Image (cartoon, rainbow, N blue to C red):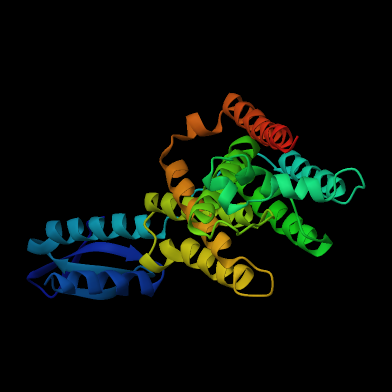
Length: 303
């Protein structure tokens, strides 16, 4: 808008901005003053108007356009992503798997042998028994251990499925859990042995944190707001996976690190590749197949 406003008999002042509220005019007055443009705030026909001298009109309008564009970008909310999957099927299969394996652990037929052949024994992993990095994720020491990993596994798994789809989410969690167990298996002493889905659960947390952090590059968040996902993930890692009785902190940390790496990779993949139904089905079948093959390998080795 360019309305002439008479300021005395000889001086014409032009309006570069108007609003029913004073605050928007005050903000823009500061912008103009910052670049050395003299301006005045007035009231005209029931509105607040910001006026400048005619020779400054073009430059003032340009500065205000730049300010408006920057302000829109900064205040632009993150586009709400469509929920890819409700995550229920993947979470249900996860729960069923852990319950079945736990039942086999404490059956008279298997009991000790299933833990012996399936645990993440560092020496065995170092000797090439790769399947232990998977089978160990399905084993648990007691009911409390099992229920804790079911609750957090379902929680993080569903959150990740909302964003990535169940197939991609659970395959990513499994692969990151494997990487975490590999890291732990090659760093720990050969006699070290561990069981539990915790490594994969903290891997899921790492994936969720890194993926969200990476995606926030697309929006003009403040530096603190952009780093919030990783900061929150580290806080949860410290709170849930910190030192305690019978807690393998190193495996939790290695799982989280593996998850962060996987989350970063996933964020760089195109949505079309990542979220298509065909990819989801393929990844879901791949996840189930890896677990099944690992237990078959473990059984054959234990015979």
